[in-house]
Length: 153
Image (cartoon, one colour):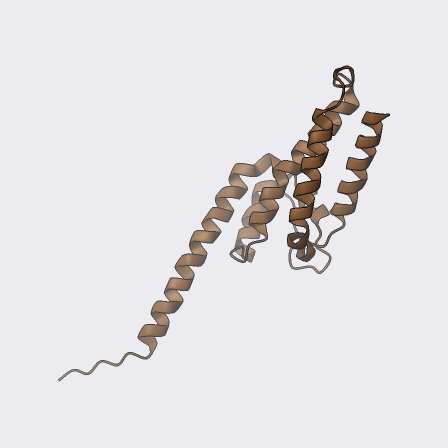
């Protein structure tokens, strides 16, 4: 019953989270992280005899997968992520992600199995952060030089 209760609780919670629209996800990441940590602790504290059950292994995998996805969601929610970066994510995952759609939800990202592409997605988001710095420096430089006037004798 202890395993079953946690199993149902985890699946119900994640099912609810899947319905979050992508624009709402950043507001919920802290709460989701705390809740997943609670689930992980409860899972670790399961009696030894339950740890051999297939349901235990499914539960543990569900928790671990979501725990792996959470930092990626944080990274993908950054302002540095542009449509070109989403295109790279789609190319890597092989999934169509309707990012521009008002109905784009966490479900879309979970179905893309982001946890299988952690390193690649981290590279994309790190690159996006660096590109944002370069783009803002270019804008600053352009702003300085746009008004510059040279006079030649």
